[in-house]
Image (cartoon, rainbow, N blue to C red; front, side, top):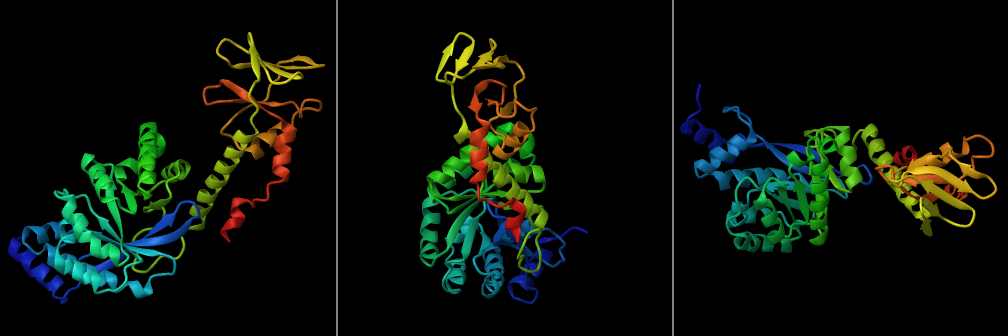
Amino acid sequence: MSVTDHDWRLALAATVSDRRPPGMALQPIVDLRRGTVVGHEVLARFLGPPAATPDVWFAAAERLGMGSALTRAVLEQALRLLPELPADTFLALNLEPLHVTDPDVRAVLLDAGRLDRVVLELTEHAAIDDPTEVLRGLEPLRSAGARTAIDDVGSGYAGLQALLRLRPDLVKLDRSLVQDLDLDPARRVLLRALGEITDGIDAWLLGEGVETLGELDELVSIGVPLGQGYLLGRPAQEFTGEIPMSIVRAILDRIALQVETADMATLLERPTQRVGDVLVFDRDIALEIDGFRRPAALLLTGRGREPGLLLAKITESVRGVAQRAVTRVAGAWSDPVVMTDGRGTAIGIVRVSRMLEHLAGDTRQPAVEKTG
């Protein structure tokens, strides 16, 4: 049976009059550097009839001139959660840009007192026709401590325009940029570019819609600081205190690997000169290369030409390369490891003695011990 405008008016009237108030679902927002919950997005839930998703309810309310009233009803319910909000976390509330300029909507927010733990997510479903008016509407809310976010950034040019004009504190990536991120190098390039833009306006980047370990791994690798999605936590009736330990471990293991990878670059020795097809490092060590600069053999004083190379990529961890090096046959375990880039091109060497010294002075604990 089709739902008429009359049906919608009755349903919306019951919702905004508190006879059938909207429900609230809370989805955790996670720090992708530590694996901890730092915030919750409040998602409105409406009891039918009509049986429809929240976006349909809001669209019907706007069409019938009740958008502001429904927004106020949702905000009133959401703000009642503030006293229960866990320490050191924030509450993210969705808000259409057109309602930021509504005095009645602003009054609901300002009546809640200080808004230091509130983030107002400006959705991109409606175009921001006049950013100046939105900025003017946000001014008293920001003065009360509220921070702002722009949702679904990256889905179109309008999102970047709003990003530069409104200077939000938080930038939420459109789900389309996160989906299958680990399978699409072009998206990784785009995310890095958006990361530089958000750094330039002193904002935090949040990857939304994280559903697979591959997507999570790429977000952590790129350096996106915050994440949200079913993999990290589904919407629930209560605040989420912790995410699954397996996800925490995946985050911390990737962070640990990045740290070790960065350490490998600090141990790299580059050649001091090139003589024909030989890269010279010092008077005792040189590297023979082919026409594509790929490693062919080590040239070691007193031992001559040693074709049995140990190769490693510069992106590998110090610990992993050192373990491979010291398990070589006697007499060869201390030979330098030849480092290559992702294409197999020789870029330098790392001495085993330097890797062992580095590891001996490394006081970091294994990632699994950090989760306790």
